[in-house]
Length: 271
Image (cartoon, rainbow, N blue to C red):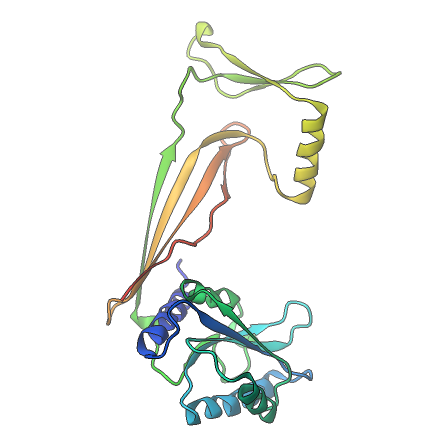
């Protein structure tokens, strides 16, 4: 099931840039607001409402995302803005509202929607009372019920450039070869074994990568799947397209495992 809330957040960020006449075309700004003390969820929500009031009174717009810290569990806020505000003014206002440290950094405009990555799978009971996972400040964004999400997936099988082998034989230094049957041959004449000669250095490198998590399995490459996702605002027609690849590997009989190497990093922003 698609995360419609995350899609609505990304589309709202796109609307934010479209509506801001002074938007810096080649960049935007990501702000992070944390608390100096360990506040309760209710107190965090109260302080944020005070801070929102300052945004509205000073004509500032942003999309904010609420996140709990992975180390200490403290709630903090991420905000993306189309303009860089005066840091001293923001810090003064934030401290008046009970915030502690603030941080701001410039990010490419086409990466702004990735602020939605801070949306965790918090249950409603885990969020501070009266708070949502994300919200628009100072402008109307895209509500979840206006998002239409679709996806398509294509499988591109591996193309054999030569006669497919039926078994693989691993030849290791100093030990007997190890043979694995990949598939049953249609007839005895079709039997073909692929010989792989592995050096000690290659063995050491493979084990090191497996221990570090870089290699999760070893098997026969089958092909790849391409998935295309579209999130669209039904009212304005604004849409975001993403795509990612998964490489399909067969390990042990008919077991197929998809290992994702790509990520959703091909946005097409159309207004």
